[in-house]
Amino acid sequence: MELDTGATAWMLTSASLVLLMTPGLALFYGGMVRGKSVLNMMMMSFGAMAVVGVVYVLWGWSMSYGADVGGIVGNPFDQFGLSGAIYDDAGEFAIDDYGVPGIVGVGFQATFAIITTALISGAIADRVKFGTWMVFSAIWVTLCYFPMAHMVWGGGLLSGDGPFASIATPIDFAGGTVVHINAGAAALALALIVGKRKGFGREPMRPHNLPFVMLGAALLWFGWFGFNAGSAFTADGFAGLAWVNTTAATAAAILGWLLTEKIRDGHATSLGAASGVVAGLVAITPAAGALNPVGSLILGAIAGVLSALAVGLKYRWGYDDSLDVVGVHLVAGLWGTIGIGFLATDTGLFYGGGINQLAVQAIIAAIAVVFSLVVTTVVGLALKATMGWRISEDTEVAGIDLAVHGETAYETIQQGSVVREVRA
Image (cartoon, rainbow, N blue to C red):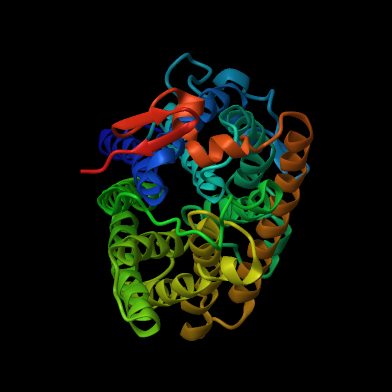
């Protein structure tokens, strides 16, 4: 295959866009927490970038796309350190079927692993040890993300080469199962293991900087075009379709969320608009190449409504998912993955395709939930028993930023063990 410089340029751009999503997530999450823990929240995203960036080069690519082991994972030693992933037998850069050097694909896929891991941090904001989070990031991405990526995209159990393809070919265009269901289920497991923040349900824990939240949502939306349109793997009509579908679903999700808020609470909020952005982006991720723009509007609008309703479940069921990772990523990820079975233009139920696609989408979604819950629970409990998850109660009350990182985001006065923010 000859080098296609246009496709290569598009994929390099897409990889850069997806990498930008993690700093965007840091702003989004950072604005949603209280001022005394904003730096720690942002550091959890940057920490995930550092850890996963190293791990992916060493064994992450090989575990995701290396030689298959039982349909579950790639052999970590097959292309350890990217051996065999960069050059062909003639010593030239290996080129994939789209005319793009394989090393560009490695970079693109690494950014997915980074953002998926960082997403989980929002469920455990304000209260966990930074060191434990860093160790968790390395273990979780190894035992949960890489196997899931292999199962769905690397020719494993949940791919078009797996057993469920005999019913219908599973569809996950850009990461409904691999990224969002995976991270959302992991977030639920960790929230239960770590426990609630002090004062959860009794004290107000409002976002300290809503402009940060909206800026973060904007950067996520911008980066998501690399996420979804980049998953066409070349600059073609499918990339254009994914781009338009991503915009349509996201816009509709904002309206769905705001309408739900207005009816339920009497206000359409900026936090709701920003959250609607993410809900729509999550839902369209697995479906971006399988729907038409009108179907994307429907998918996005429903995602906005479902997620707006789901974020309140933590108060009813008593788990502290601090920044609504479960309500947005798990719920919208499930809907987006299963909604393909209704709205896919070729195989969807509403387009005369029967129930086969719907059945397969439900199966792969269920397997993704169970796999992530089980693996995350084992890893989370093991770290709880060894390193421990929780910071001290005094540190949580005074503010994790100063105690853990020796810094504060805003001007502060320290009196004894109490840190009080100075507000203009």
